[in-house]
Length: 79
Image (tube, rainbow, N blue to C red; front, side):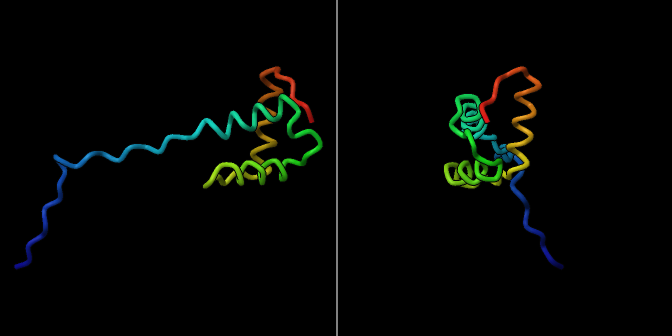
């Protein structure tokens, strides 16, 4: 007969959910509001953010979404 190894369920720590980094959101929000990205296309802003924040998968469409969200919140964005 085969023996099946027991799994450690009591002592093992549960996997912690990955925390989203607020840094990239703040970077995008601040840049859109203070004019740092003035004249840049969404794709260019996303490339800049990906270079600054390792592991980011941000695309130009995410920048467009963020711009729309800021406008809905009544915040001024500089384009």
